[in-house]
Length: 140
Image (cartoon, rainbow, N blue to C red):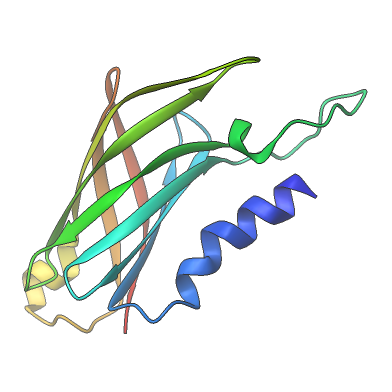
């Protein structure tokens, strides 16, 4: 149920009235980051991608799966995006937040100068070290 809930929450961006929706996979953390932008400003949320459940199954809250939350800005040409927010590390009795900064590039839009084209995205993240992400960007 948790896996279904977090996947639906991440793909909620596809049903929102947005200018652009992105989904990134971060292999170092086995997590997905979904973002949507209305005009030039938007939100992003990330969660761990879980393929197996612990045995025996122990219920935990969805906050233990969610690991990122913040705001995103896209330039007018839709060629890059900057995301700033918090990286969430949940423990049994508290949640630690550390700064989370992303810079995403859209290579096909940079080359073709077409703001409305389907593109893949390359993201670089800094939050307790550098990480990268690869994903898909869908404009509206």
